[in-house]
Amino acid sequence: MKTKASAGIAIHGGAGTILRSSLTAEQEQTYLTALHDIVVAGARILADGGSALDAVTVAVSLLEDCPLFNAGKGSVYTSAGQIEMDAAIMDGQHRRAGAVACVTNLRNPVRAARMVMEHSPHVLMVGPGAEQFVRKHGAQIEDATYFHTEQRYVQLLRARQEAGMLLDHDADRVAAESGTTSDTTPGTAPKMTPEAAPLDPDKKFGTVGAVALDMHGNLAAATSTGGMTNKLPGRVGDTAMLGAGCYADNRTAALSATGTGEAFMRSLALHDIAAQMDYTGLSLEQAAYKTVMEKLPQLQGRGGVIGIDRQGNIVLPFNTEGMYRASMHIGDVPLTGIYRDFQKL
Image (tube, rainbow, N blue to C red):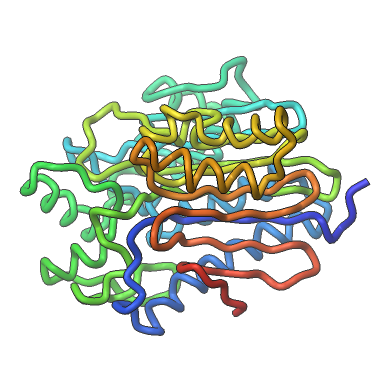
């Protein structure tokens, strides 16, 4: 029987080249506060006896609603100037899973992924077919104006000019370079100058995710993303791929990834972590470190992973300069971090 203290949750909001010296204390605090509030909201569900599935659903939905992160409201643009989002969710108890890809008007793709898991015989649905299906089950629909942010659009223009793809959004740095800024009201991105960007825009990998262990001993994971700026329409990354961007199994761990998606897909990085635990007896910490710090770099894979095992051990390894992340065990204080160290708010 799991104890209340072992239940816990971890979240991430992207990894990459994070410039500590370029952040003011106020800008850093904006991100840390958002991570703190979201991980506490997920932990509250666990503390009330709720399921790990519910906890990760709520946490990722909140990350999708926050324009600081590349998912939902904060999603980046494709080369066609549209939003295409992917998401997945997995239940570790029965290894049920659901995923959506290339959806354009769903406020919370993670909730749509859960609808696929709970109301269809399928695991992955894409595009208009997925949207039509989840509409019937109450998915919240938004028009294109909801997802539009000036910062993301300016970033698309920059990527087009450079004829390349940006692996994520440092929206405010790009906006600042073009002379636009965002406000600093709660839930919005902070004002930044070109010198005050939290991430190098070409070296940040934007995905959000959550993993949790509930007081019943069940694990769950969820991941969501807007993809890469200027990506080709129809591109699907690791987020919607079980074992690559999202994975959960009560025998081992719940895991969510952020990074160079193609490398995570080619290596099935999250399944690899679980397999090392299952087949060789490695701990979650040992397996995650081996995959993130040794195996992924062999495929030019950069990014990070969050995970929690059936004992409630939490790991958050990353091979980049930083990763937006937070974790909390029930009855303990939340920890938040961007760089190698953690902070208690």
